[in-house]
Length: 495
Image 1 (tube, rainbow, N blue to C red):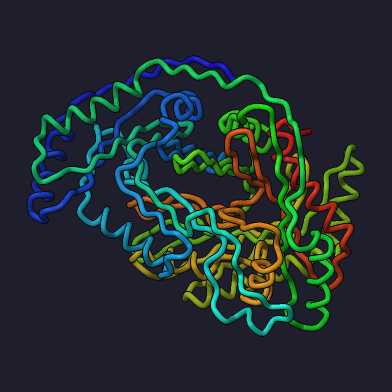
Image 2: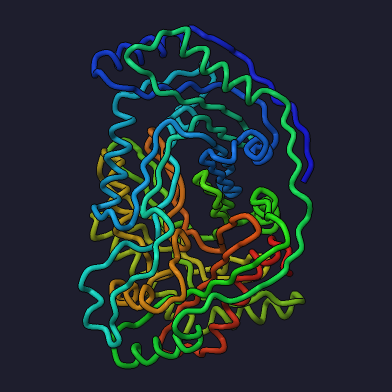
């Protein structure tokens, strides 16, 4: 991937910018601590992914989000504030996320060049939660229980406010630069810092991906037992009544003769799967999590004294046909599959029950339809709801209730998750967990981190899962995960 692009900006130092900095300094002096300042302006950028690839330092946090159905791209790098909580630290990570947002947005000052709407100029918070938290005694009465001791590599919570963020749509492109204003700051010094970042982003973008790699090895990650043996054990427990459904993941390691390029891999995914949300999250520590997810766990928008919510029920899968007739036959097979319809109903019920527990009013459901991707088709039911609450930060409580849905966890949730945590071959990290963004205007989206994997130098680890219910067939579930692996394997150049 070798591209060159010129980016220009306008409206350099408006009165709004000067006044905003002055107010931010006054706030910082009043509280005796740093205060967040944010400035947004029109920008000209045709390729946000190229901008991110060419302008982000390897040791900076990076975030990319492309949601074609919502006409939205977010590209961001650097950090002015962040929270990273290790799994061992304990505590309520969703509550910690809420406090982090409150602490930084309550006294924040925003300004713009006068041409920016509220959603585009609002301060964005980006990040992810890991799939697992440390469990208590909920697992202890499962047969073969053993304490979970797998090494945890990923934070249970990572949220950050970026140094700069580009919000791109078909109608506008807005650049936001954030800064921490200290009580002793002077206006000219802050202006100089902002100008540094604008000049950096204004300069001609040039990015050349590394030399093309060759795949040297593909191997499945093995645990105490092979994946098919774990599925058989899960089926035994289902038949014994311990749980009704459990979603089991496989992991594959892909090794190359030279380093993978995460931006090139993401570019392939966004082109191959435009119906999905393409995402990338890099902590700046040499490991990148990326993928193309078809599933939203929670989307929200504040509207006065209420919140509008959406969550996707996505469960039940089958491949695509080589011909139009074969594709239709497979679609009919999926729509009339008792096993897949039952699995899908588990997911619908789990989402609706948890939303209602939080006081939400569920909209009348639309009919279940097919979501067709290039290599797989799913049963899909979007669930929308409304909740009366003027404090949009309660969405983190809702997210905590929803994750994991029965699409990536199981029924009952606690027992299924304990089994997964004991028996899967490796820690999921952010796989199948909430990843996304929110902003100070009370809107945001968290996708389910599926069809995803980790890139670290010349190694990639990719994941795929299958929902196991009473009438699951081991060989069919193996085939389903193989189909799901194909998206990342192709993007990695392994197919």
